[in-house]
Image 1 (cartoon, one colour):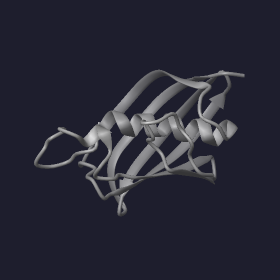
Image 2 (image 1 turned 90 degrees about the vertical axis):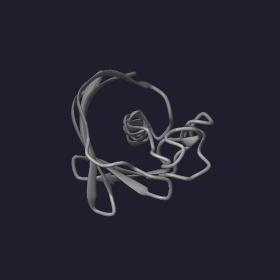
Image 3 (image 1 turned 180 degrees about the vertical axis):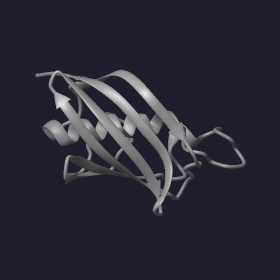
Length: 126
């Protein structure tokens, strides 16, 4: 499934189903507005955009369209290496619970190396 999101914030490019959840993909492009002025000598993708990527991927996974999911809480967010312009991030996510509250446990990787682990709860419409 290909992402379609309110511009300019596109934090996930595609979502594929996986056992117990999904895998989202995001190619971080050098010209993205969120990178402008963010560590100018080293264009680091902000960690909050990884959390946004989980939300956008969850929306697409659940309903195939953006919207309908809001962040209720972040139980844990551990960032272990920077994500840089040119990287492709995989958001391997396990989803548990029942609507209206779902929990996600996400491992973010670049080239097989873990860059973040995010555990969050989401409030879902319908």
